[in-house]
Image (cartoon, rainbow, N blue to C red; front, side, top):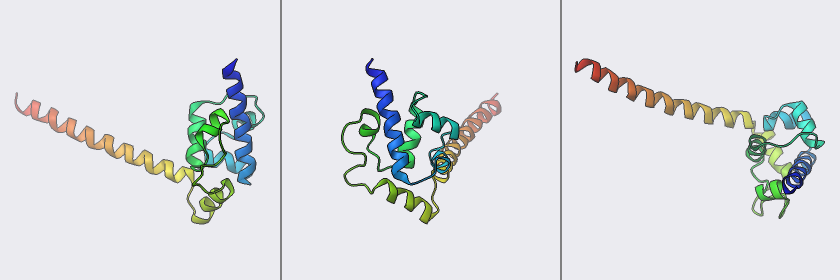
Length: 131
């Protein structure tokens, strides 16, 4: 029963974040990388929220208090943070989107993987050459 209450709290809080952002649902869906129809279902409490969606919202709106989003405890924004509306304006004014931030992280992770694979290839070549 407690999980049901938490899901409802999270859904309601996602709705509050969206309303505070002054973004259209379509734009909010883009910024948070949540599908448009899924976002509609979340806002209307028809779909359970998953961890990836919570993560995406917190990454897109870093000033949202995670404890408030998940448990409904405390204030919507972190004490030192800007308002959700200011957060959104900074994304638009600076041309920074969640997607570009996400792409940079993906590139960094791929670069690390490539470096690890290069080391592995080097090691395997040394094994072949020693035979």
